[in-house]
Image 1 (cartoon, each protein chain N blue to C red):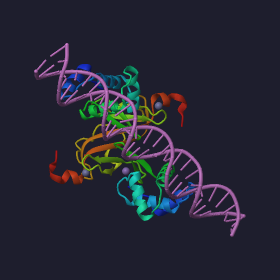
Image 2 (image 1 turned 90 degrees about the horizontal axis):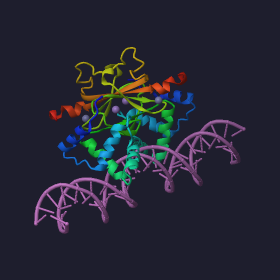
Image 3 (image 1 turned 30 degrees about the vertical axis):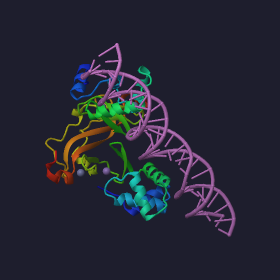
Image 4 (image 1 turned 180 degrees about the vertical axis):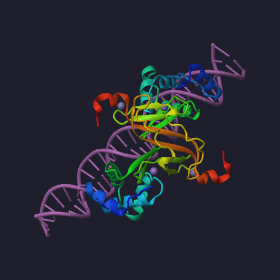
Length: 145
Length: 145
DNA sequence: ATCTGGATTTAGAATTAGTCTAAATTCGTT
DNA sequence: AACGAATTTAGACTAATTCTAAATCCAGAT
Ligand SMILES: [Mn+2]
Ligand SMILES: [Mn+2]
Ligand SMILES: [Zn+2]
Ligand SMILES: [Zn+2]
């Protein structure tokens, strides 16, 4: 799954008139280093480790900015908002034991061929699948119920 | 898509030791009459119309109770929590113009035959699809962008 | 090198959805 | 009618997010 490089990012940001300040860069860096869909609070905590005194407002502002610029997606799983630096359309798996949110390749469940209109006459532009169950780690432990 | 009758409901509730008080019945009635996935606040407003002085706490308590008893499902769309009286597994369509959440039959996108394990070794127990685009009403109006 | 205006950041107040609490009420059983 | 358990209520509390107004930063103009 494609991830943006620093270059991509600089270029994209610039092309959209986005000023990449140190705080903003720290936020993007963390999101790309973190493998799994951090929440706003996790971003706040981590960015503050490297860059103390970064305010919540800046974290939220930046996440919203990047999202609006299309450099970041927001995913909601079970009422929790998380941020996803992977831009290609893909699906998610949520572990019911540990709560981890993992990426799933879109090929696993491709669009039903040529169906742009649902029976209810809705025009589908995108779709995403959420799989639920036990992740590799949790499923491994002793065939738990 | 199957919906519970009053009888089903009484029986189910009783069999699970759930006392169906007037407030609780009003909440369930409303959820079943409303066609589209009301939020807690919408339930609160409507139940109060018929049954003034019903507190938020009772609405939330009841929704959580019914959910725990399996008589109701909670669906999160775009960070908003909504309640769904349709118990069979099914998918959803979210209109990007008006925000309406509509049911979609599961047949539209059935499980990939025999796949219980994803490539990442996750064991899939359930899955759900969210389609996004324009609903019949919004899509009809003048081929908007 | 200094000035200046716009963009950015900051701390904290405000808002919102939801949970918790403790007292009052209801209801089935004696 | 009296009792105790379950339920309901109003409002306090909490957590996530947005808003606000003042401070800071910074690029371009002088
Ligand atoms: Mn993802
Ligand atoms: Mn539904
Ligand atoms: Zn797990
Ligand atoms: Zn619509």
